[in-house]
Length: 92
Image 1 (cartoon, rainbow, N blue to C red):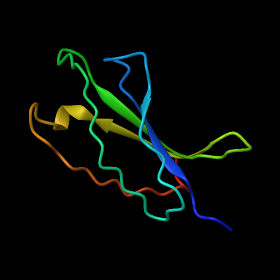
Image 2 (image 1 turned 180 degrees about the horizontal axis):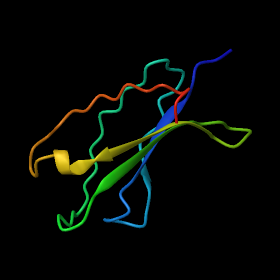
Image 3 (image 1 turned 135 degrees about the vertical axis):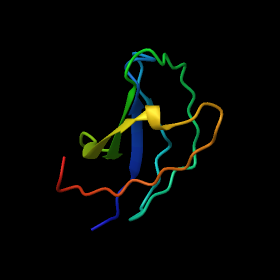
Image 4 (image 1 turned 180 degrees about the vertical axis):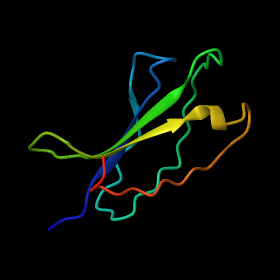
């Protein structure tokens, strides 16, 4: 049994139709991504960032391990914030 090769897709539908993704962290039980993404935010609408943690597979379709919806109204413009999500793959 090998460990997961995880990456995260990020999607903010109020800012972009495109989904972006992190790099893949190979063979890790506790992956950490230290990456920055920039979006142009319209504060007049509700902005919820969708984060999907996936396991990259070379032969079969990638597995979605869990999804987190994060309300970015909690963030302050121009301030760097580090957020740690507790993920439970049993709950979606």
